[in-house]
Length: 113
Image (cartoon, rainbow, N blue to C red; front, top):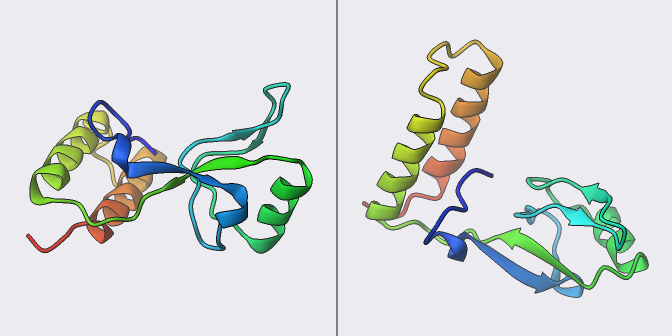
């Protein structure tokens, strides 16, 4: 997603593919040895997908770390999201809908403020 800027690296973590679980979300694309993208960032893992990674000898992946955000991290990320989507005020446009989805995800990560 958009939230991996300076100081926010704790929001993704590298794990062995053997530790991957259904429902985890990729925080970084998965590519083969030739650099071809096999799976995009933001993809929710399924059992079949994890099995395919293991069959292809992909040993590590980056997944989103779903720890709760502190109040200051939440505020900083919300401000960054608002800045990136400042030109898309129309909530019915594709960018407006994307912003809404990202805001909902951000809200779900908000700790007790």
